[in-house]
Structures are given as C-alpha cells and as structure tokens.
Image 1 (cartoon, rainbow, N blue to C red):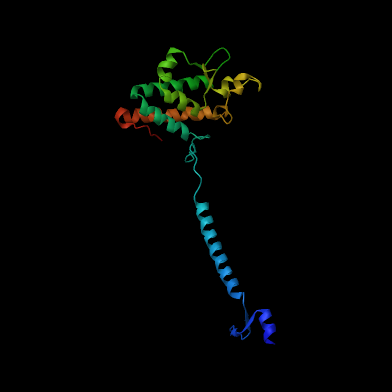
Image 2: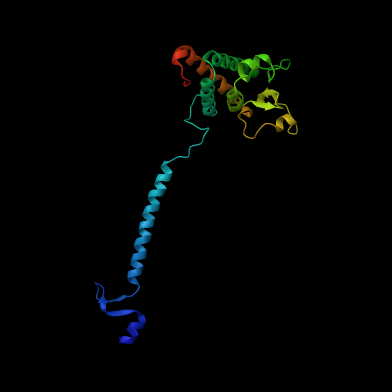
Length: 210
C-alpha cells in the first residue's frame, strides 16, 4: 500500500499489533474510553447496591408492631415528651383519663356527648395544662380541634357529616382519626402504658414501654 494512502487511512508503518496488522491511530483513545466506561459501570453497580440496602426513614414511622393495625410510633414519641414535661402523677392521671374517654367514645350512643370542650375544668386540669399534650399527643392519636373549642374524634363524632360540613372540612388530609382501626390501637397502646407504669412504678418507668 502506498505511503500516502496509509497516512490518509491513519496507519503507521512502524506500529503493528500482535497479529501483524497495522494499528489504527484512534485505537488507543478508544481503549482508554472503554476503560473509563467500565470503571463507571462498576461504580454505579456499587452505588446502586448501597442504595438498595439503605431504606428511607421517615419521622413518624418505626418498626412494624403486629399488635397494631396503624402506625403508633408518633404516639409513643409524644407520650415520652409529655412524660418528661409533667409530674409523674399528672402523667398517670392524663393517661387514665384519655383511655377511659376513648372507651366511652368507641361505645357512644346518640343520647351522649363524648367530645371534649377545651374550657371544661376537668379536661383543662388533666390535659389542657400541658402544651405538649395539646399540640403533639392528641393530634398524633387522631383527635382534631374544631373552632379552637371542641376536641373530636372525626371517625366517630363526624361520622354522619356531609362533605360540605364545615367541621369535616377542618379535618386534615390523612388524619388517622378517620381510620376505624385507630381508636382500638390507641386504647391498646394506652393499656400497655398503664401496665408498664404499674409494673415499674414512679422511679422505674422512664417513658418507654412495650
């Protein structure tokens, strides 16, 4: 092959591969690019593998407890916050009061009113005095405050309300109080809390319970 033609085609007379055939000028660059692509693929595989192993963690979610049909982790956290902010005796009274009222709400009849009034002396003394209970614990359980006055359980007290009713419009989207299984889960959770308080006592209980 003439020398000029070989230069145009990119061949070098002095450079030959193992097979004895002329080597193309751009082959070295192609090999380097192939090596870089191979390293990137390998790195992507390891990154993807790590991402698959690490699961996203949300604020309100926790380990699945088969005893409950809804997520109660946020309620557990709120109970610990309230426990650390009030005296032990006040915490016990609050838990007993909420658990008793929830049982009444679950078995509500048409001739009874089981919702809470924010200015009620009993409610104010047991729950209303704790800002953490009002702002964190009750909403986490499923309660909704209507018109800054009435604490209701929407799945019970607003059960027959129409969609255009102002009270139902005040219920936030995703409110767990609309879930029929929620009230049973909260009652069960408070029973476990009461059992832990009774078993460990004032100096043994630290806000954590199974």
